[in-house]
Amino acid sequence: MTTNGRLGRLTWRLTVGIWLGGLVFFSLIVTQVAFRVLPGVTAAKFLAAIFPAYYTFEMWVGGIALVSVLFVLIRAKMVRGWLLMVLTLAAWLLVIWADHLLGLMQQPATTTAVFHRFHQESIMADGLVGVLLVIGVIVDSWR
Image: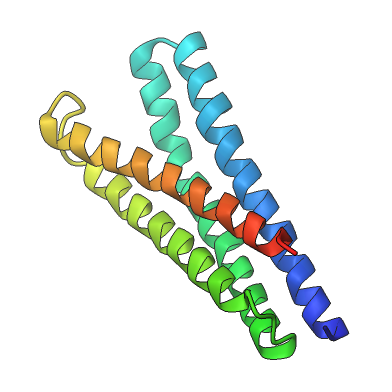
């Protein structure tokens, strides 16, 4: 693998690590603490204010990961590079979908079935992003 390929792979690893770390931290810690410490309505308003920044962060980090894996494909000709590309792209597209769902969740009242459906879809999308990223790390590490 060329130096350029190693740099792309290192950048992919770093960005995916940051992406996955942010996802786990936000999903398992920030949301749980918000609902434990704040009253329900206040916690919901707090998270509604934070979610756009959260998804923007995920889109930027995911975009950098995509560019990095493209760099690996072009420069290093890594055999598993295409699989990493598909996994990273799928995760990034799911983040865009979850961000879109967030916009849809702003319209109905939080007590409606429509809101709950969008909320469940966004949770599933976020969980699937995490699964895809973990699979990507395993694929990248496999010898």
